[in-house]
Length: 229
Length: 229
Image (cartoon, rainbow over all chains, first blue to last red):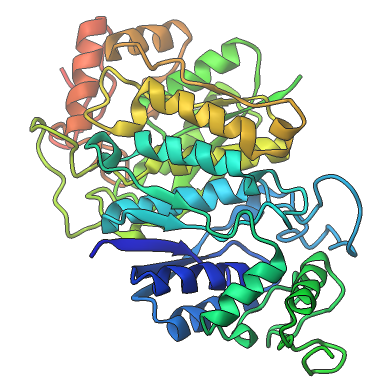
């Protein structure tokens, strides 16, 4: 069976996308990036999730894009904002999904994988341009031209299974597939041991998702050290 | 004036592409990648070329894609072949130009640059899929969707000024613009001090280019330590 490369951030969405690919019987190789993100706990979360869900292999690639500047997620001089506000937020990392998909494409070419899974979501995308369906379609087209497999007529499919789902839908799907969300970290300001601030955009989306899905939120928050009640 | 991001490998082609952008009066920021290439001398060459041609800034980004395997250029277990042979060569680095352009796009977004210059060449492309005009066009489309500038209606142009030129044409253009090709390194097996093997694909293309252009070849070769006669 052909392999599948799954972009795995350590958060709720990509864990769910991985569980969906595993459930289809695919041999999944997971890829995380150390791009200098403040929330280092997500890298440990990605390793845990990959192993717990039964991926074949996990790679963590150093990617010092913080050196190029421009995002609150990699630049300590820019403050991570409270939720709300219009437009593209400062937590946006320049061209992040383009960079991540490109590296997934490189690995897919080496592994002769036929599918790349990315857990982007257009509903909760918070104004990030590279989470939209037209972006995914454009990358799919690029991938068909960019690689040896593409030239030889065997392209790679870009699978974005969460793109049209609400956070509640994602939580329901993952819960049905047995994802242990206590292993995941979504918070932009997570502590090194994986506790969430409870106040950033990512925390709010996650908390509302569990609430709307009617699923108990297993997130450990900084204030209480306990799952949110 | 808006900035331009120039992908600069340290080789002959990208040095020429940089000289062309500088000659147009653009403020160029050059970007090189330390992707574990065996030919380390090209990174020093990129720094020299950037400075000599008057770029505004040079960044060298570590990018350990060798960790993903699959190329003779980053994997010491795969032998760099002699010139010739059909199909896509083992010196092809998986999805390399996709990855390089993605990171250039990220930097362009941070710098609010309007142009990305890449010195790819479809004539001498040696079977690399990501050196073709249709690949560049697909990346241009992707870039228009992937970024904050794209969403706001100000895309970035992907400029591949050498794509239809022969190596001789490139050498002639660069020579007319005053490029000092003795600063550049093309060889896949260059020594640390920048001497060329004289026998790999890249050396052969380069040597034939100088010969066809009727320009003295300033390359220092391993055998003689002298420019090729």
